[in-house]
Image (tube, rainbow, N blue to C red):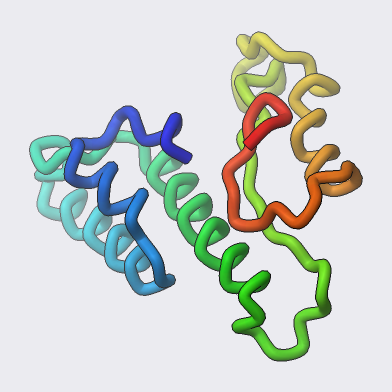
Length: 132
């Protein structure tokens, strides 16, 4: 996740990295929304891309939930269930207006590895380039 926080202020980067519980991430997402509504998000260290901020929120939530799952904090979740998140990279698709550097097959490599590959008991991590 650290590699995707380079557009945030150092303070916000640290808050994302140190988040331990879901309300920490929720607070960050709500703060971004408030700052955008006030027109001061850039001044306060937030990037301009709501899409990018939403991805940071999903990554933060996934990191926390993934760790909580392996700690047994959810009743009814079977042993061996893992939760990770990933970035496929800049893929040549309609979304990137076909400017991406990766083919769709290359972009799928990391998600497929997480779904089908042997990643041991790794949970709650951010993966990119087929590695955490």
